[in-house]
Image (cartoon, rainbow, N blue to C red):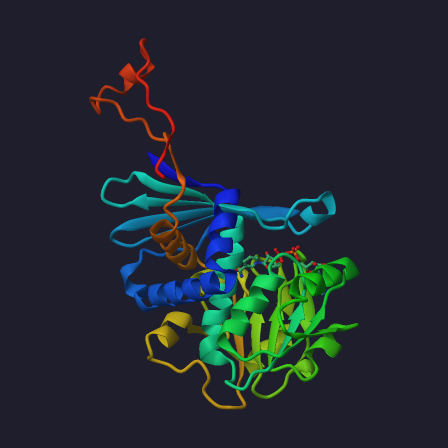
Length: 343
Ligand code: NAD
């Protein structure tokens, strides 16, 4: 039997636990995985590119668990009423190779991406960070806001999106969060005075949303949307001014803001393991060049498997009496092996 977590099950679970608690637990789980960096068999994800988007497989394993995520990135999907990013996850037992869990992973990806941003901001953003500029108020934006507020005493959110409907949606969703919400008419206006800048747009192009004139000493930039070859968000001239933190350098060199560049970077595990400080000086400008790494999914899937037990077990793997007589499973009378709830 394989535990299957569908969208309603995950919705109920997060509602019962509290979204801020979930974000905080995921932040801890992901950082703990980065501390165990050497335990993992890692690789850059496998990406199949199309003119209008990408479909990716993201595997990673340690000695006990193998995880793999299927995820897409289709920036024009919202025009047809579909999300830019949708995902499914699998967690397997390394000893037998059998899957343990198949789960929705679109909501879980938004949660883990925000938790990862928070984890890096914990080490890189100044402690007295009160103002967040948010560029792009799409599906990831509220998750990012709440996760970052778990780590720093955010009071003001200055936000901008090219689509006014996305800005209205964000303002509505964040209205009860006791934050000063400042809608802005441009990126420059949003970034002015911000200590922390999150960029989470979805355009399959080389963009120059943040320019050198917008940088301030001590700023931490959390660049989430540049995650594919030919899809970046920052003016490349910004990069040499920053201390650049990445998840897994071989993947980020292909997909991140640093694609095509030879600039030096720090892999986050060095910071997690205490061999390097995230923030070197008060005035340094730090940049988290986030692309999303399988290790974060491994941590999120293990956290989910350990904590969400009220799910349905489904017969996705045959269980023949004689493991070498798989054929008997298709001979009459058909052996019964059906669905059973485990709660
Ligand atoms: P989304 O399509 O829901 O939202 C993107 C928003 O950006 C839209 O509201 C759009 O109007 C806005 N936008 C586009 N161009 C803009 C511009 N020039 N200025 C301001 N706003 C602009 O997408 P999403 O699910 O929120 O994802 C955002 C980005 O994050 C995507 O590029 C996605 O691929 C990426 N992503 C990264 C990770 C990661 O781990 N790094 C994980 C998930 C998603």
